[in-house]
Length: 93
Image (cartoon, rainbow, N blue to C red; front, side, top):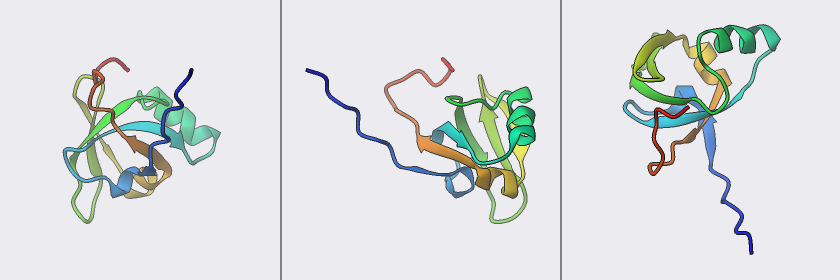
């Protein structure tokens, strides 16, 4: 008997609170945006942690072993994420 996993709710990265860990599940943008983000290490399944998210200005996120990068709010709104599974190792992706 196979138990289907419950779908996790998703939301834009721009809505994630600081210190929350999430997993990138979709990029709502064109080919150029997806390629640019992939070149920076943001690919599907990547675990992200929001380091700083003030009401204005870019978000600071930690990617893969705590490498930090700034992401503008417009791009952050196109990055769709799911809450990270606490049982998994966040550095495996």
